[in-house]
Image (tube, rainbow, N blue to C red):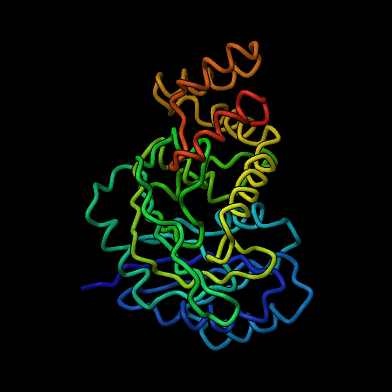
Length: 311
């Protein structure tokens, strides 16, 4: 039986400290044929030299692209553009995590159980770890509500480095990427939004990667008290707002209008248009809007930032 060919798209930037652990875990994937396409986003440390060493010793598996600094969003979209649509599946990868050996095999098996004529995306929980790979907590947990466009428009439940796409999802997103990426909040949020609107998202609650947390990007390793968690929650939502959700929603509607159902188009337009109404009308709309976040309290904050026009 032929192994599935899975393309791993890895973007790097000054990641020499942890790249060995990541690369070894990619090369150790079970029961799949991996091809690793790496785009370096203008590193100034020893990352490129290290990657070229791997490429020299795995000529049939690794390709390194040295690029100018575009930032994480631009780098991943450029990676998609430079990846030929010739593989069975496509996955995204960060530079400092560690993948479990069965990550891709498990993702492929779950994707193969679904119909193949629509965009499909697999994602999973992660085992959050500290810089030395000591376990913190599992995040995100299995979402209690449906992973639909109505969630993806206002929240991301899918961590980019766990995502695996089928060919239809990859080719459609690759072929219709917006020229102006500034309204895109993050590449994984855009992909989750696309697949949830036009296909199906598969969430695996079994953590399949060790997701390394650094001091500057800790999402909550379990040591915060409830007051700090609420402070960080509100800070995150208000900083995430500043009109970014509405700008991305507007771009998404503009880009994919012809592919969305009439109901989806109406709901997105209503979401955008009600922001220009009176505060009373915004309250009325927010109280019954079809867009939602997974957690009850997060959903309340969503309604608040909508009424305050900070969305």
